[in-house]
Image (cartoon, rainbow, N blue to C red; front, side):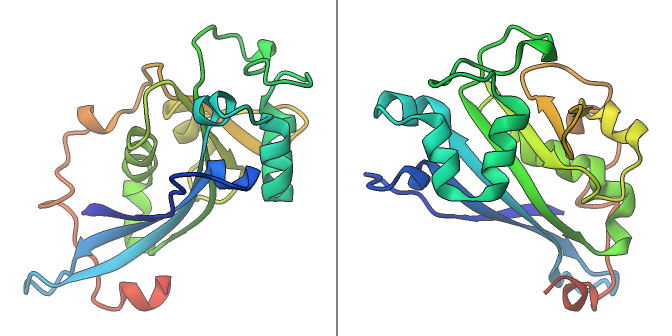
Length: 197
């Protein structure tokens, strides 16, 4: 398994929502037919809000979120301390590390053969971004039970339908500590791509 990413980056944003970079992450796996053929067995839609970059450019984080979508408005209201300017992550989340960016996982489509690999996939996606970030994910878009989400560090945000994970902390599950090898231990049916695309 490997993750292949497509993204859009604006070198000189001229609209507030251009500080949010959309990513499409394809989960590419070998088929179980032994012919070294690769197929896309999963696809994850991820947005990344570079808070530090937006603030340096004088952009209001609330306006950036508002300019993008209703989902980003929800992410803002669920995770950011209420203030006119970006004041940081909500104090009731009880961690003091600075957050320079927000990762928002808003769509996950995985072939059923990847069920046991969901933790590795999500943890790896979080690791693709800088350490001083947090991940927000819509609750219920994966098949992971609450226990496995908690092992990944995801917390339920009270009053909202999202989960929150500070990426700079160490959790019970990490890809680095998983004894499985995603290259040799995982194969998928050749028709997995038809399920995803």
